[in-house]
Amino acid sequence: MYVFNIIIAVYLFMDAKKHDKNPWLWGILGLLFSFITLGTYWIITGKKLLGWLILIAYIVWIILGFIGVVAVGMFDALN
Image 1 (spheres, rainbow, N blue to C red):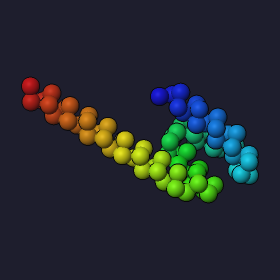
Image 2: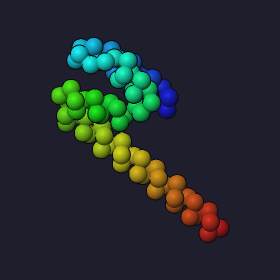
Image 3: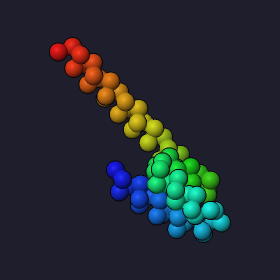
């Protein structure tokens, strides 16, 4: 999972310069929050559709993961 964070951080650092954004800020945010930062960055820089798709997909992924953890916990509690 950390590989994605590093790739996203490097991408944001390199691309932020092209859009007159602070590369250090976006690189650090990308390292910490990965796909949320990437989606937000793309929305801000004009790739709105792609940005919203990334954000929505990531939020759904987190929700499904949470549901999975709860379901496993409930199943384990029943046994």
